[in-house]
Length: 354
Ligand code: AQP
Image (cartoon, rainbow, N blue to C red; front, side, top):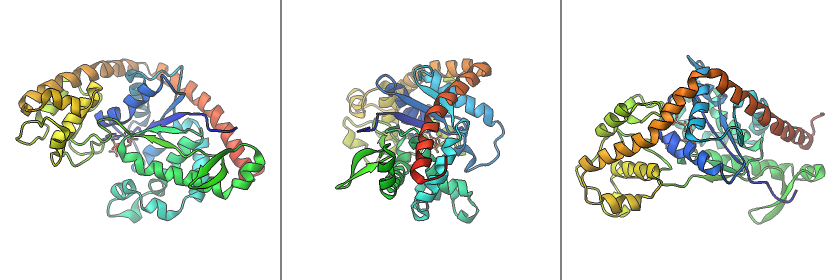
């Protein structure tokens, strides 16, 4: 093998209502990438128990994420859609990566600091090791590209660090097994087993912000439901949330420069651009100089037009749990075949008895 085969992987946690940030930052990109790439999309249920152990309806949450993927346009026949816990090799590789990664690397993760809060000693060990499992999710398929929102950038850098340390520490053994790829790390040519993943973060809304505070990320766990547009919201709710979205008193600028220091305006323009498939500059060419009282109704119309068909299809899919479960089971089998091959090679590289 001379180079890594391009492969897209990404995942979403079943930890609550999916929102516009998850859709624009991740799921919409999943759909766009599937025409030109081999893709694996995962409901990362093992991650969902890191911050909160007991969930009222975890099965329902898992099904709703899978339904959102499919309702948005992911093709589960051409590509792979499955839930993480169906492929135990994710957890097996995560254990190995726990031994590759350093505690200092994990302690520096801003998501861990945010989620653990002040009482770090009381956070689960799983929450600290979360990025190690995330690296395993991707690398158990030796995936090369990962579409995510901007908040996951640091975790992907850590996945690269883990892959790099594994490749360097085991390089002689990798060469001996004949399963590696010639690659250059820094200036150094090495023979590595895991690719250094490329994050795919671009677009006009890589970090969708809260509708109540333009400096805070739109998030499932925000106490205020008005802060986010959920994928299951009906048209009336979407309209009410956008009408109530925080703004400043000025008209929209004509150029993107004018959005500096105006986080709420920047956010709403970015959302419009992402939903319309255009850019902030295009949106401002159309709406520069207008007041929010004019821009908000246009945004409501666009958001409802884009999201309503997805919401309707999600509802329809979730009524037939046998169908969704069948898709996940079949996807799990296909994913397991690939992950089994990787883990056989990884065990061989490390030197475990097979
Ligand atoms: N606000 C956002 N803007 C753009 N992308 C976002 N993503 C999440 N929030 C935004 C992207 O959605 C994908 C799935 O995220 P996740 O559910 O696995 O984890 P998360 O980032 O922890 O999502 P939340 O909504 O913020 O959940 P809580 O409140 O539980 O922390 C990822 O690609 C993520 O980047």
